[in-house]
Image (cartoon, rainbow, N blue to C red; front, side, top):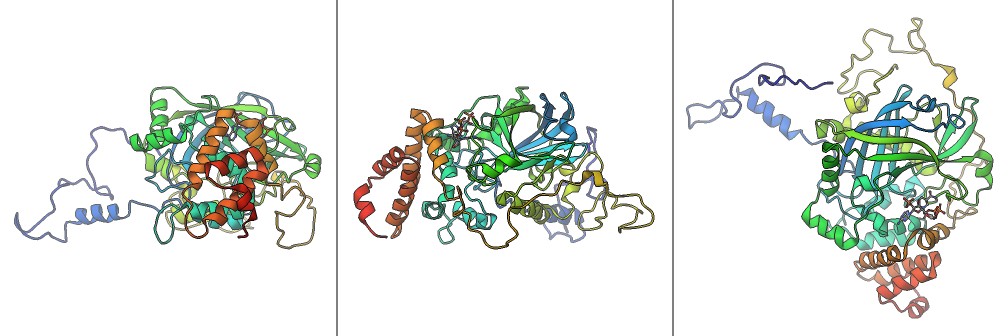
Length: 501
Ligand code: NDP
């Protein structure tokens, strides 16, 4: 919906009636009580009372922009998705960046993963890659998600952030180690949203024109270069400009310096997945680049700030269930959980018809039998049949969109502990690889300082238990790392190992 650009716009009520008095309420005499009949006062106050919608329970603080995605390389060997059918294809995108744990007014420089959620408006429907600036996550089963997020929020008694809650949970969930290491490195405090990579993080599937499936991961590599704050710089920026990352994006786009990311993919065949030494659907693991090289796909550019923040950014609703033909799910447990929870969160936050809000609307075809509900604003299917099957036949399923069947490795339903299967209990190799392979000597020093700073906040009677257990995880990732953290925390390793907890 376009805004009205007419500068001589008359002031009106919400129902469209022009009126004259916007500042003074009708009263009995100049010093007397107000009249109930001045409904404009009610309309203003009642609307104001309802201005806030529920804050996102995670990713509350964010900023976003529209842009363009352009296909630069041929990947038709992997997917039949129409957007990738030819080099040069383009589509409009909307990208929302965010921090995760903080409230809507929190600082942009907090140590936190950053959300990186992209909506591609394609002719086969809206496609959302709802990712982060990290390739992995803290937990690999969605049942743990709410517990984990509680530890990132406020202590139920003090209403303060709590190092105890965070490190207690992480130390008892070693699968979190890989993501904790990334979070504690300087990539946990990016300089701005423009200077970080984005990851789809989950494993998805691509389906080709012959209905063959491969597994795929998405990487958005920043063309601005990686740039991070050190912990002292981030602390300093928090006091100087709480909204630094948002301001950076607004200033860049306003000045025509449009940020860009290169979209790359990693591809794994179904046969390779069966023999990969880790579970390829485990969100706490990456696929090493040397074995699964990055394949270039296209370029994403952000070039248009929305004219109204609330209308576009706050009401933007992403859901990993929004996929397009040629892109499918995988058995990644976290993805499976998010298929439910994201659309559900949007229905709670914005209402059942949230996909009719312009930023969320597919600009191409939408035909179905959903009807009614709060804020149904699109004509509601007009006089067409609202049931299926019907004899009037104006909407029909197209079987060519059917995905290939998927073979499973078991027919036994149970609660499988994903820390016990082959490779599943290895929480340490990739965390150690990060330390040994990816970090420069200075990055390692900063990582250790950041860990020591964060763990120094642990206190109370469980302090030693939490610290020592977490130290064990760092030792198992890399002995040098464990020693450096122990030294920073003044822990006598031999004595700690001898002490029962
Ligand atoms: P490579 O040696 O080929 O590359 C290292 C990767 O680590 C690069 O993608 C680099 O990103 C990234 N990186 C550097 N510093 C950090 C940091 N502080 N936090 C997160 N990522 C960082 O990697 P391998 O594929 O052999 O994997 C080695 C380790 O690298 C993994 O265990 C994992 O921890 C990490 N990694 C791997 C990724 C993957 O998809 N394979 C993705 C990201 C990290 P950049 O290119 O932007 O500098």
